[in-house]
Image 1 (cartoon, rainbow, N blue to C red):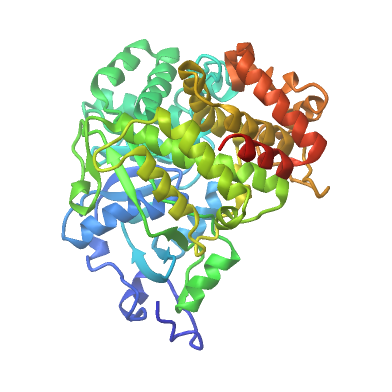
Image 2 (tube, rainbow, N blue to C red; image 1 turned 135 degrees about the vertical axis):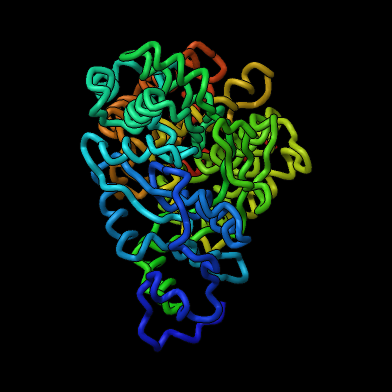
Amino acid sequence: MKDDTQEETPMKLSNANLAALPEAILRPQYDRKSLRAGIVHIGVGNFHRGHQAWYLHRLMQQGLAHDWAIVGAGVRVTDAAMRDKLRAQDCLTTLIELAPDSSSAEVIGSMIDFLPIEEDNAALIVQMAQPSIRIVSLTVTEGGYFIDPATKGFDATHPDIVHDAANPTTPRTAFGAMVAALLLRKQAGTGAFTAMCCDNLLGNGDVLRQTVVSLARMSDPALADWIDANCSFPNSMVDCIVPATGDTERALALGIGLDDAAPVTHENFRQWVIEDTFCAGRPDWDKVGAQFTDNVHAFEAMKIRILNGGHQVISVPAQVLGVEMISDCMEHELIGALFTKVARDEIAPHVHAVPDMTPEAYVDLIQSRFSNPKIVDTTRRVAFDGSSRHPGFVLPSVRDGLAAGTSIEGLALVEAAWARMCAGTRDDGSQIDANDPFWATLNATALRAKDDPLAWLSMSNIYGDLIDSDRFVTAFQNALSAIWADGIANAIQTYLAGHK
């Protein structure tokens, strides 16, 4: 991307300044003042703005979907900071695409407002109850759906869920707000909306249905039945590597002449595969590259097992070894080889091909994407929330390997590396800061597991009945003992040497 504006004063991102942006920066060609809201999105982070909002923006650039604009929302106090940043720049976002050998920038304008963050979610409920809102979408992290880790059913005992069931008109959670809005729609005869999960969960639409319907049933069984019968919950697979925004990313925007408080960098790859089940209509996202299919599960499984699971394979040992960036992991002689071996031998054999993509070819694609040096994605970010990500991304491959009688030693090594990481220090003695919502529990358990590896596998909320598998237990015990005795580098070398 040409950079001939560095000496000029960066231009504040706003509607008023769109026409005056540097020529190389793409910007909305549609009249943003004429856009009308059709979607409420809860959880306006970088991924949403670099993915779903981009697809909608590109559709708007074609003169389409101008009645499907996004209204942003959040249910956490911390969401207020993002709201302030985006509203100060008319809800515009600069997307900076970073390919290995080039870069480009685009300002997107598909979001038109961001609701206030309120403890009782009153404004959110009112907005979702509007007849014009036909889709409510979410990116609230994989661990945010109140799933019982042992049964995979709905966790009705969580304090926030108990509160929402007892106080359905003043809920704390996004799901409580959705239930409250759907009650208003039912009472007004407005009809249901489509609830669309955009988080990395296998069967994410089914998971969202379980959460919303189960919560409604705790306070209003008739409403729960109405939601279950009338709302759509399409499963989807979403994919684009989108790092967190920090000083580096803001400096990139400044370097091209834009003062954007919350720019988004992303790789030169996107994918969105969606079930075409929308009870109140939808934008024609397929006209800008999204794919509608009846077989989302195969796409989901391939991406979650190889990309998301692969992220854990490399980021966890990287944290212990002090490797900071994902691209550096792929250059590392041990971590890169670990990914290749585990992905090819222990994950891909249990993944089905999808149209135009075999599991083996997908491993090659992910290897290339992880290696992109322009994407400043930290191993700390990727390793965050392992208590949700390992059960969802890694352990299903372990179970499939055990059932098929194939190798699980590399995956057991990854789990042992996670236990080592959660002990809170690197092999060089430096500290690993808390990096999980349940860090205190994980840290205490990891320290016990140094002498008693079974303490780690006894966390039934994560490992379930895997502690009953002699093969997995033995592989894990051997790996963790080796890591503590000789260091993680030697443990990886031993695995690679013994499994060629």
